[in-house]
Image (cartoon, rainbow, N blue to C red; front, side):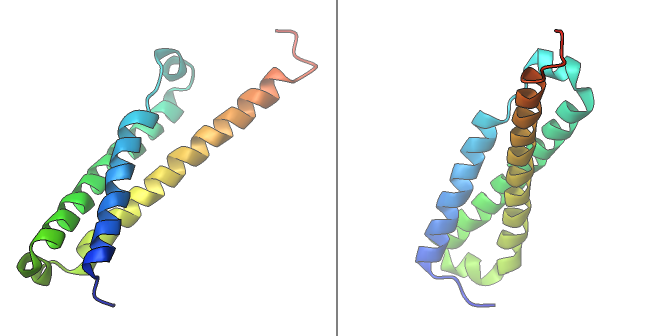
Length: 116
């Protein structure tokens, strides 16, 4: 595995900070949605929580590595990339779930056989 330069660490820091902000802003659930789709809301809440935690871990480790080369020598690259990868997967799962929900809602609204 190649060594990361300070530029690479800065880029990772930016990505993790952005992910943390997006987890905080984007993935909120309304009470009505929770009542209608309990399992889906529970799944989204758990995935969002895991994503936030792993992003925070990766962000802190990247921050320490960027400002302390001595600490970076002790931190293995995998300690940053594994939580970072998990947080990216959580973001993809939540985004895919929202997109699927929109498609289902649009299909349900445009159903000509629906009397409601």
